[in-house]
Length: 534
Ligand code: ACM
Image (cartoon, rainbow, N blue to C red; front, side):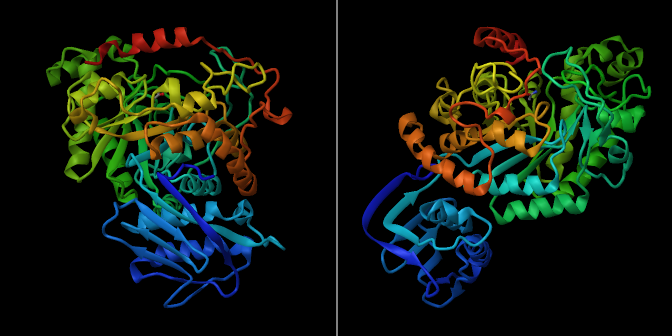
């Protein structure tokens, strides 16, 4: 009944009951996992499980297992949770929690509950090392508390990478000490469009928020304690209007602009003067200091080139740089960022548009316009994370019913998402090694509260988690049966997921127009976008 489904489950006779006599033991290297486990078990059970040298539940490292692999043996006498590294032990503990009654996830004492686990042995390991979610906190700010909760829910599903989309046209969400106006000005907008499509009306309600550097350090540390790596993304050279509102000198026209109040692709992009490059290198210096992640996101998607084409100074700049095509100007800029990040021992991570030019060898690509980017990146020897829009864009509607709130793009049902396969079939085994894994993307134009994020993310994120953890061959009916039970865990956790029979009345957005398109229209649109990928 676990999600993601463990590789191997062998049931046995009897059960283990947790009570006041139950103790835990773990070697010093597992002190962090042990503290987390004690904390996770305590509120609902009321059991302050003490440590003893021969615990009823033993956490241990087993060098024969992979870092994220674990083995969990439950007998009437006790349990042994072995992992190749602390991450594996942590996932074993997560599975142990799932084996307990779902009420274990409640945050207060559950009176009268027996805390029993049926005897079983699980042997488990993930298929991919990058099991991610991209969360856009720029279109709508998600308060710190809700980001921490989002990370907790990722960990329940053994997801390990939070690609944190922090800057956009509509908001800059991370404090940068050297450039305080990025958040003083760039974190706030006076209004937002409500509804999909270019003509959706604005609500006239101010919106905003940002994370201080202390908040960021807290989130990164909290995530690390749950074996989640936070990969930050600072968008360049498009999707930057909030930064331009704060520092107009970064723009092509250098004119005052507001933080954008509309959705879509914005024409206002960076100028690529040396001073602008330096500005972003300085921003990335602070970002690198805050985030230990090997990968640092620079964006790179959807950068219109019209302003560069029509601006005399940009044309002059291109001549200075010996560049003849605007596309190469973007490539030049991304290379500058790449050189800087590489010199600091990090890897540049960008959307698949960065494949339209030459890339530094270490650059890693997020393939979003279908799988074309994944094929191209892997063949060119670049690591890639698959996140095709027509499979794992969780802002897309969950059915074709008119009851779905904001019918963006095409329907992606639970079953569609469950079919996610990060490795394109065209790749040779050698090329396929470049596929690090995959991620779901949660764009929040139409998610203005944590409740709405829950609705769009769950239960589809459970399906993504299983697609990234488990083997390529999967059985949707089997998943559906386990999901029925899993939803009672999500209930205990307070997740406001979309019910199988459609949105509850308060989850609808009546009167808000959407712009659904057909699968064929969407495919044709995406095909036109990836023409320049080689
Ligand atoms: C994207 O969806 N623009 C990466």
